[in-house]
Length: 291
Image (tube, rainbow, N blue to C red; front, top):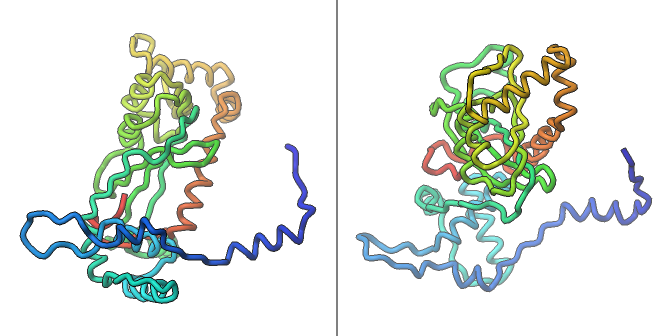
């Protein structure tokens, strides 16, 4: 692998310092859409702030890991510093409106990727930390959500996403099947670990005309009488591993041959998300946890 050595240390050092610089601005479009103009005929007082204003506040809260009261204070100082005549929603208004924003992102990216990597990670809602769990085991007061992502390994962009609760009972392959329905048809290779070795998920990949790069489990057997093309491809993977020896070394060689280790690039995106938003959900209520 070719390595590139940094020679312009002065410029590189300034770029590292610049990463700590904070610049805020409100575009004219954002200012014009700050107040709610979409009044309905429903009972009660109409909302004073638009959904875009509440969503903007929640994004700032997520990036800077702020409690709601501190968020209101930051927004007030920003508006004052910029000399804007904008009213700021109170922390209670932001909390209430977060439940009913209704912002559904059906399409996260406009890219037409050739490869998609599926993976999942846990996000804690509340409960003990990892040190306590390691020392004393888990207790009943431990709740988390599971974030499922379909990622373009070339650009590291998130193509599809889904959040599930720990009480859903759906495995990764079942959620993967749901995400495959939203996956662009341009994807020709689908990567996943052993948790995605499910029949329905493989069948959905076959419907999209893509190739699954999913290692079968060590005790996998061939189903010779099947006519299902998705299961036939799984049979081929099992035969290839047995043809290479059937042991751990054979599985390692198979993964190299198939390019399976591109799947590990998903960990970069998972790390980036947790560094940006943290490892905890910002709300304990499912309705207020943004997908």
